[in-house]
Amino acid sequence: MITFTFAGDEAGDLSFNFEKGASRYLVIVVIATPEPDKLREFISNLRRENRLSPAHEFGFHNISSAQFRQRIFTALRSANFEAWALIADNTALPEPLRLLASGLDLYTFFVSEVVAHIPLEKRAGATLILDEMGNPEQTREELKRMFKKRHM
Image (cartoon, rainbow, N blue to C red; front, top):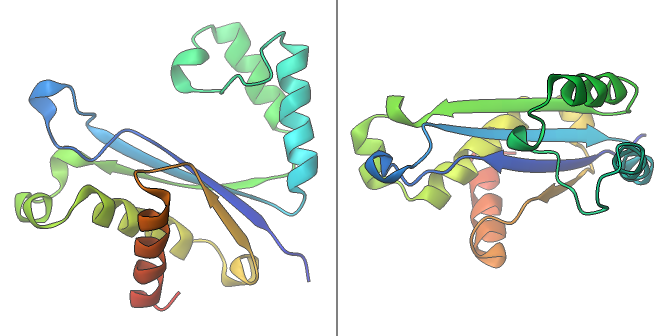
């Protein structure tokens, strides 16, 4: 059996304070690879080939040049990973939900929603690595609780 490593990250926030610049969208992406070390090496090589610092994070605002963006996406086609994503329009979430659920509650629900769409055979025995969101211990416990509630 092949064991996958999953890595997730988010863009945006769940503060709902739109007058003060809160983001309209929350995007959560989870990637999976059976060869995490090879994928790390691939990303390191991509940074080196593009004369980027070893710590460079490939973010939306960092890829503003169309030529650079094309080069990155062309290279990524040969990388061994799959991806699942969720985009939530924060302005479309019902107000009662915004008032009753904390940002962490919504975050763990949305992460679990992405994971729910990953085929069960790929999730079996897998490792999930998430970018830091708030207190790492609390996030891990809340995520465990959400997975348990959803029978995952």
